[in-house]
Image (cartoon, rainbow, N blue to C red):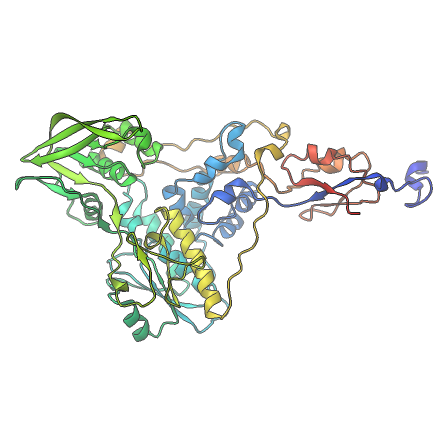
Length: 540
């Protein structure tokens, strides 16, 4: 059968004009930075591992994720998932349940026994990590993967740091945390428990360490002067939560007042509720000013925790606590009113923040300490060469995800320093904003809601409150990702180009333009669902 005349024309003949010469602008393919990736404090390539998950390659997704964060099962429970707040899908219906899929992958890995791979080559360098919390163990993992020998010195009897002693079991089951920590020791990281480092300089010299990463958690509770009598029972929130790890649970009594408005205040109040108490949180400002995350406040209220906003404690003694009502002034600042209310309370728990014990740094020259934290450079190194710091020890927001990110960043900079080099961070791509997307092409897909424990068990047991996704809805949730800013080979550009100037390169290799025939009309840009093409001025 003879081919149509137009198809038999030779490229470059007089009848097949190279219409690309008409252009003033040309389309180019590019990778933009998804807003979820940009937001993640741990530096995860969220869109990258979601891509594997939505194809059903869960182990591939888990391995892609753990290149940056070794704790997906922990993070699927403890992370406040600010990535979802940045997700472009939230402007269409609801954000992708990134945290839900991360937890599914983490739990799947534990269930199927997926393990990390030990480094193929040893560097001969030995690094001391002080603290076996999220930042310290993250650094240990990344340093070990880079081929360094790592010893972690932990002052406490168990690994986990403030994840163990600050996050209740109903949010983070201990068997999950222990399993993910064990995976790190299995690749050769040495952890020495009940080993407090009193002088970092002495420890480094005696152990012949080449570098150190300091990741001591904020275990010391801040105190406030509250007049109290001899019969008062005043405790700090950190001590209460820490005691929950032992066999002897704290004796709080029936009526408990928690003073503070952060996540620790919420955690200790919900813990008290499960111990049979009737907790009341007293906070000096309004609800919208509480540092605690709103969903945690809501869950606490659902469980029966009472809230007393715009209130401050004046005195406690003999089972009675005096509360002064506050009111906001013209600047929105709380001011005392002189109006006093008496509450009966068996215990007063202070949840006013935590501080870090920095005594191990007393004899280190060159360090700068201000506001109870250590100042570090962009490479996470302190003022003393070879000593790095992260997590609660440095100026930053204090949460698990930030701490894990610090551990990764410090490990890469320690590795470069040990090799006499400087770690060069890859330049960021431009951000993929919602306006760059063509959402017409995406199917409506309501967000999958994770199951929660029934209220009776939530109030009376330490069973995990929030459940996880199963394989079917985890797959569905992963497929809600819009792939913002990065080509997923939908073929739209190929199909809409009026000049047939888009060339398919094969599965996984995307496309390229044949500029001899592209007139620069820009239809491909306007019809690209994910914003992976842009127009640039033609080169003269």
